[in-house]
Image (tube, rainbow, N blue to C red):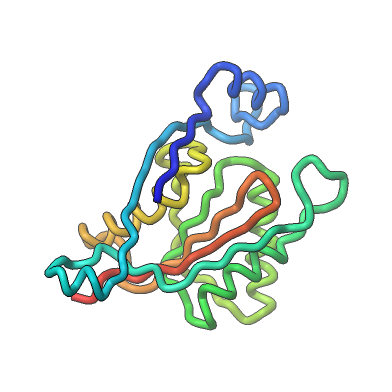
Length: 187
């Protein structure tokens, strides 16, 4: 599974700037454009172990939901779809690390803040540190999911990521929201 995306082509940059979505010297909020290609191999962990290989990480659960509001609609965006997909993959277990694709876009940041408040009201105590892939690569669009997996597996292999459950929350520019939970390999 992979993703390739670029926000660095001149027509894309011009369109993003024209919409007021880029962070510029004159605009303190907005996304930083990026470019990335990332591919991961998903295998049944029983086949990996039977083949004498050690898995790099285990995806425990995945959830996706279509939202009800898009950036271009006049109605307010709701954090409900994001809250539901996060709750679905965490299954009442606390994550030790959150990976979220906050990219400098104030609309995305506002949705994440609303989701965090809703989660607190539901009793979820998010004290986990957050990793933000766009800080390292810029906005990478379709490559964000695979890049998040790669960041986690690399962090576990080099032992700078906490060795327990991580939750990845994906906020698209459209109305879909998704999340998955991952564990490091059992050593």
